[in-house]
Image (cartoon, rainbow, N blue to C red):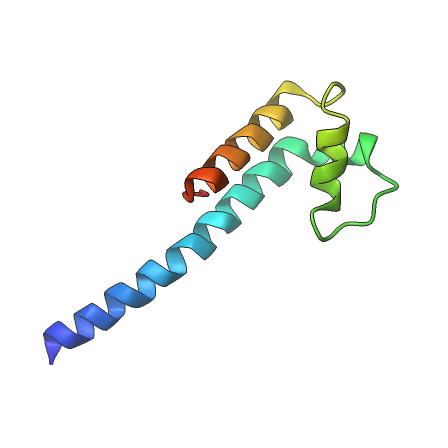
Length: 83
């Protein structure tokens, strides 16, 4: 019984991990890109990845920290390890 309970708990944690990892990456992006988003994409309605698309479109004007965070997020997403 204990073994089965532990197995179920492990499956639940494994399923939840990607969601928590994505939330962590989103927080990093917001922290690194907040000023750039406000300055460069103020007219863009948030949601659906529109701000991120705006920042990518204006990457020549985006701060190095924000650009690095975007690249890290893309790499993590491609690898399936968003953190």
